[in-house]
Length: 266
Length: 295
Image (cartoon, rainbow over all chains, first blue to last red; front, side):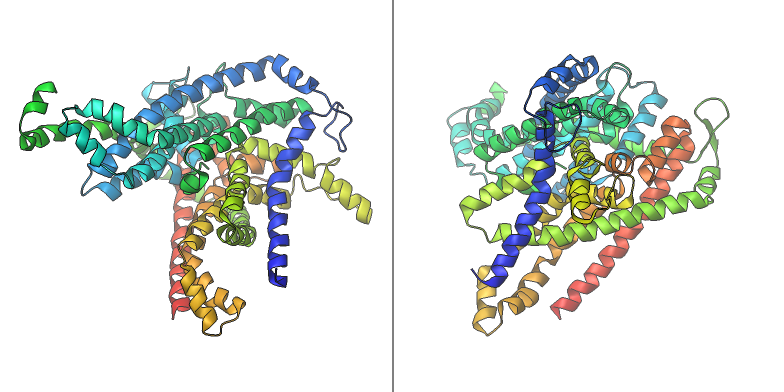
């Protein structure tokens, strides 16, 4: 390796450490037996995980976030896949325009979208109680990921199998279910996982649309951190970190991260 | 549907057309009702009167804009917000470019692992990442302990602009790296080979071939990072310890705490307009720079 290569490797290693170390620290802090978030850790223990699970607001918001993210995933996956099918295959003149419109919620500052939605929901009397408002807000920013991953696969899709099925007498729905869906399954699942994590981690939109009794985990964690600072928060964070890592591993297995790296959530 | 299948293909195509439209219809409705209309409503709200009791009166006024623009404090907050985001963008480029370069020319098997290392932090919640830096940069944190051990002095970054910038850079490096890597991937190795065989040193080949061709990725990454950094909320609150106010905080306070929707909307519009202006100026400057490097 040349001297320049060595320098580049060193610099790059530094950047990777900068990216990864803080996240590892959170996990170590959660496993710390001591009372404070101090280093070095004072022994290993799972007691902060138990404490977090016994903290009612954490448990409740965790379950609420799971339920919300579940519904957001269903809605975004169905609508996003349908939209991708239309834009890639049927939209003629408006293809680029539609593409821009569907990813627009990612280009607008999410906090402003949250504010616009809050004012809209309150002014129209739809309100922000329950899950409805959050479901809509999260779907706006999760659907684009399904759309992006599925349309990437559809763009390089060989349609001769579908044509064969159609000419053998299969209807459009049967063709979709038996031929198209199995072929794009990896992309649909990857998009769904991205939609799930986008909703589960969503902050700016949730900040404005949560209501009493319907708080999501990130908002709960944020409120907690503003007033207390203990390893229970690290335990909650660790759960969120593990979820993200699991999703990265699954998506890598299904379609390869290379294929979706440009559409990874923000 | 079954009947349609047996008819001639020409007729089938004619009848199928409205059915394919149904694929996009729900998404378009969602965007129209819950994205376009709320934003237009916010524009309208910014021109309405805030009464002493209640949310708003449907009476036209430009008072909110006067109030938004006529306050020196607002300008200080705006300046700070843009400055922090600008610095973050530059630093993410400095860290993200080498990362992207290294990733692009890594052997495929290692590339897969490196991509995982870049995308995993991207999927971790911003709140968690802010918390991670709270642990690291606090009084008993690793950074302060190391600095104390080395120099005998304290280095506490929580509550300072530097702390906020560290957190923001951590959040946005992956965006920049992926964006630049996308551009680098499209550069044909033959071009570099050609430059080298014509006598260019590796550095010259980078400066004259790779760097200019990667500028579109740099531009896309910088835009993305700047726009997201300007509107970030969690990191400035957590790492600024609520001392350092940025525009999104000011807008949320005006809306939720002061319950002033018209002024909050006007501030949002001013913020939005200025961000768009900065982006437009940046695009123009980049356009010039790209023409210049090509010449």
